[in-house]
Structures are given as structure tokens and as C-alpha cells.
Amino acid sequence: MPLAAVLLAACVQPTVYVPTIETAQVETPIVEPVADPEPTEDKTPIESPIEPIADEPQERITPMINPVPTYPAYIVDQCGTIWGIPATLEGCTQKQIIHLSEDDGQEIPSSELTLFTLAGYIYITRNRNADAGPVIDYYRQAIGSTIVEVVDTIPPMPEEKRVTLDSSEWLIETAIINKAERTDIYNRHELRGYDKGAKGYGPISRNMVTAYVILDNGILWMSTSGAEFCPNNRLSADQIAEPGRLWR
Image 1 (tube, rainbow, N blue to C red):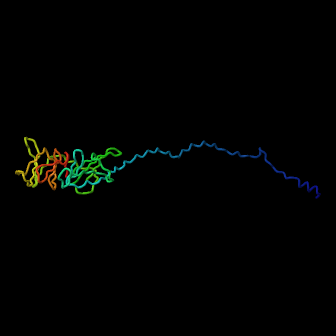
Image 2 (spheres, rainbow, N blue to C red; image 1 turned 90 degrees about the vertical axis):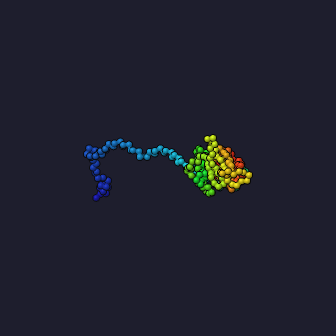
């Protein structure tokens, strides 16, 4: 084949059929309408308001006190002073003032204290001021013991009343003179220089004796005149303390 024919055949491109728009069927995609999204519920938890926690009441602590020293008897005079009466008492200078204190050594004013004895126990009431206001503390101590107990309540203080005694050493009786009562005290020890009657030596008369205690050297009583002591070998009494209450 001539060279020109070969070159002509190499340059001729094959015919390619391209469809026109009219002949080609183009499928238009169907677009579905999209609905507006529903509002989503807020899942964030709503914190409830925090209520303040009320302060729990604190347990009241009752301060411990030192024990009352042991004596045969005690006097609480009209000023609230507490006195210990020793068994060997012979005069007013021998009574011992009692200062009660907390166990840390802080002395308690006598104006805060009330003391009495009943059925083998010493009972103490303390009226004090605390941070929360006035407070009443109660204590109990067995007579002769050194152990003080804190208690929730104590029995009522015994009321004053006229007392009597009939022993081999002393007689205390109620006498009625002109329809009025009085207390007569008789000494039954052997006394020189006195006339002894059927009831003993005496009497020593007082308006009302409310308490007494027999001591080593005589008898101590409390009357409306105060605390008085009469020795075994005498028929006259010495003043020991001002009026108040005598406890044993």
C-alpha cells in the first residue's frame, strides 16, 4: 500500500454516537419534602432548690462538780452559804465553809446552788447561765461517798416542820402554852448545879425547832433563832449560824 494511504488511514477517527437531549431520557430524582424537625425535649435535669439543713440541737453537757465533803450535818444559811458541821463542834468558829467547784477548779457562786439531804443522799441544784440561756443542773451524791452523779431530776426539797426527839441524852418535844405551840429541849446528861425534873434538865424553849443533830460534845439544832449548840455538860446554847436549814 502506498505510504500516503497508510498515513490517511491512521488519521481517520471512528465515529462515536452521542445521544441528544431529546433522545436521552434523564431521570430526574424525586426529592421528598423534609418536615421541620420537632423541637427536642431538653433532657437537662432541673436542679431543685437546695433547702438549708437545720442545725441539729446539740446535746447539753452538764459540767461535773467536785463532791461535797463528808460531815455529820450541813447548814445552808439564809444567804445561801453552805457550811459543814464537824462531829467535834464546840463553837461557831469550828463550822467549815464549803465551796463547791466544777472539776476544772472553777468555783461555783453559792447564789447558784441549793443543797439538801433526803433518804441518804445529798441533792444539789445549780441554776446557771449558758450560751443558750438559763440552765438548771441536778446532782446526787450518796452521803459518805465521794462520787457525784448527774441526774435528770431530783425529789422536792422537804418542807420545814417541827421536829421531836426522845432519847436517853436529849428530849425535844412540842409544848402548848396559852394555845400557842413551842419547842422545849431537855438535857438528860447528869449536870451539876441544876435541878433535874422528870423530863431532864431544862427546858430550853424556842419558837420552833426544825432540825437537830447529835454530835460528840452536844446537840446542834436549827430554830427560827438560827443554829445553836448546847454542850452535853451545860444547859445553855451558843449561836453557831444565822437562820437557815440544817441537813443531816
